[in-house]
Image (cartoon, rainbow, N blue to C red; front, side):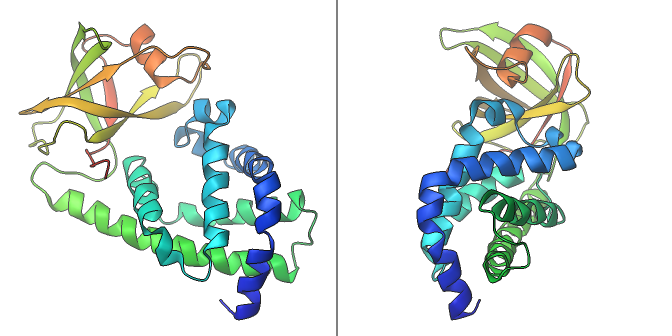
Length: 254
């Protein structure tokens, strides 16, 4: 990025502080309307509750504030990369996100798309995307290289559902005969389920409460004041022993 582009990005910090959530809310609606297949990747319950737009607004603001030295955000980038890997985000999807983000900045801030400001944000986004793609590539390769590891989604069967003081404990095991990556209590997985009455699937991240040979366990608690896309509620109300879900490989929280 040129010094001029860096200054242009930094000039948007006050606007992002005041209107960041409005921008990211607009962005998600725009992107999901234009690319409905992504509704199977992004958690729609988090979209409708506003949690995801708020989280993205904070990340965009932090990136703009530290655009001169993004290495300051190493911990945040590591956290985002783990979330992306657990949702099987792929490199080619970054162009979709980037296109919709740039158009959203243009439309929400009422700035011509051909302006220097949008060009500066394009370079800023490409810089961040390259960093994340490289980190995520390394994580996908590391998971695939481990005994019993895998990248992306793997089919599991619900082997048991038990009541505990903390909630319903689900035990899942892979439907294939391959080895299963050893995991530690406290690591997290993503579980993807079919949404009743909708032709789409939704992911949700759960913390492993236990793991044993060829199975993982996690506790599911009901969510109040949530939408029909709530994965915990779908699991509790519509899934039984013998049903199948897809699961991402365990990752450490830190």
